[in-house]
Length: 122
Image 1: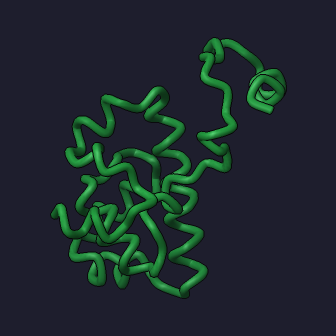
Image 2: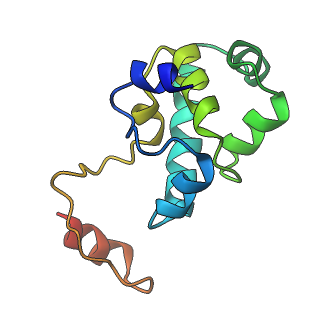
Image 3: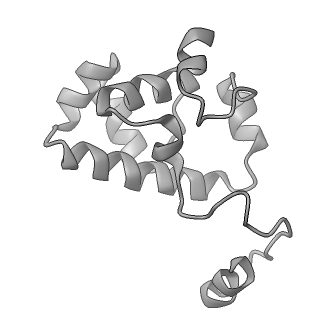
């Protein structure tokens, strides 16, 4: 598995265990939503069915459906296989459009309206 992670330098190497990955996320729901959106977009952009992607990535159709529904975060190992199957990096799968180098480090309160949240990150 370390060889797979070394292959994809855009994905943080310290996140080698799925539970550690989910525990380190400030907003797991947002990551699940970004992953669901991006996975579906890349899959459809390559004219693959969910079943074809599952076979190529060595997983089940049910797991692909759950990921695209935003219900689960897959294990890191599966993220690598999904990225390889789609010809993209793992980082592209979880990209939510906010640069981590330019994003604000302060937390945005949960009740903050979306427009104000966007302005705070700008």
